[in-house]
Length: 64
Image (cartoon, rainbow, N blue to C red; front, side, top):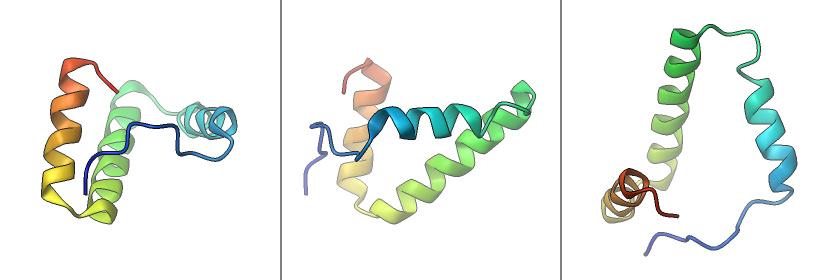
């Protein structure tokens, strides 16, 4: 399995709005903690360490 960098989210604008709205009433620390929990939940769902390592490298480099 390779990291999928092609658009793959149904209604991406709606998802982005939902993500932003989910943090609207949170302070910065709460938002950072929520983002960390979301990352860990999604990483667990993906489960493939090679894909996760590729995603970390891509995110760090600003790609994707």
